[in-house]
Image 1 (cartoon, rainbow, N blue to C red):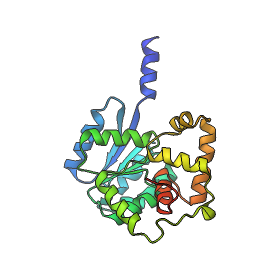
Image 2 (tube, rainbow, N blue to C red; image 1 turned 90 degrees about the vertical axis):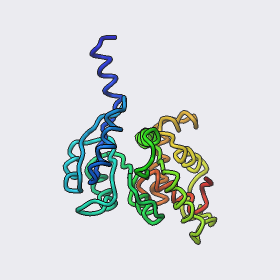
Image 3 (cartoon, one colour; image 1 turned 180 degrees about the horizontal axis):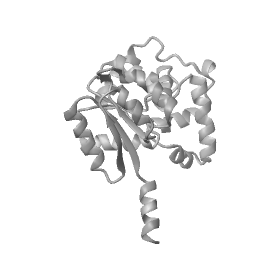
Length: 226
C-alpha cells in the first residue's frame, strides 16, 4: 500500500473537534487534550456563541460545548448546531446540578461531562460520543439518577403510549452502553440499515432527538432498566 493511501486512511479515521469555552486556562487545557490525541484534530475554538456560530461552517465532527458563556447559554445553542451541521455535541461544564443535566439531554446533547474529569476519561468520552454513545460523567449521573428516583413517573411503564418493541428496547440498551449503529448491528445480527430504521422509530415514539435523550426517556418511564 502506498504512502498516499495510508495517509488517506489515517485521515478518514481522524475526527475534527470544535471547542467552545470562554475560560482561557480551561480552553487551553482542552486544546492540549485534543491536539495530543492520535485520532483527533482541532477544527477550531471559540470563546462565545458568536464565535461558535462561525465554527459550524467548519463542519466539525463534534462540539465540546460549555454552558455558561458570555453571550448566552450553550444549552440554547444546541439546536443551532443541530440545524447547521451533523456534529455530535458533548457538553462539558462545571455545573452538575440535575436540572442542567436533564435540560442538556432534552435539548439534544449527545453526552454530558464535567471539566474536572481526567484526560483519559475525557478522551474516552469523546470517542464514545463519536461512536454513537451517550457518555455522562459519574458525578452528573448521580444527579440524573436522583431525578429519576424522585420523578413521579418512575416505574410507570408507558409501553402502550410509546409502543416500543422488544427489539427497540434491546437497541436502547446497547446505545446506553455506548455501542454505535455498526456495533449494535453486529451484536443483534441485523444490518446497519435496519438499526437506523429502529433508531428513527424510537426517536419518533419517544418524541426525542438524540440517543442520550432516548435513553433518559426510556429509563424515566421504566421501559429501560439501568
